[in-house]
Length: 57
Image 1: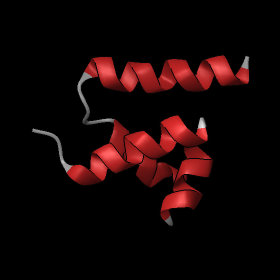
Image 2: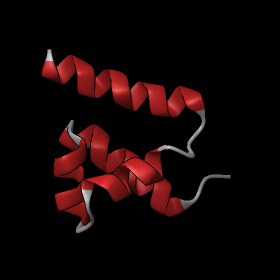
Image 3: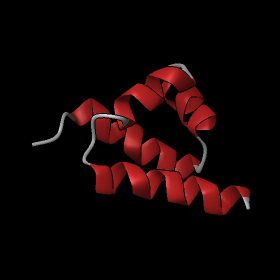
């Protein structure tokens, strides 16, 4: 089972398409968002990285 806080951060990154913007939306720092994403299973965290990379391309 996932921690709800981690999932909220994941969803914020997907919606904002950026770690910094997700942090602003959640009222936390970008580094805290990154720390929340890190413990998620590899498939989930890679998916976030891919979404952000596609946006920045």
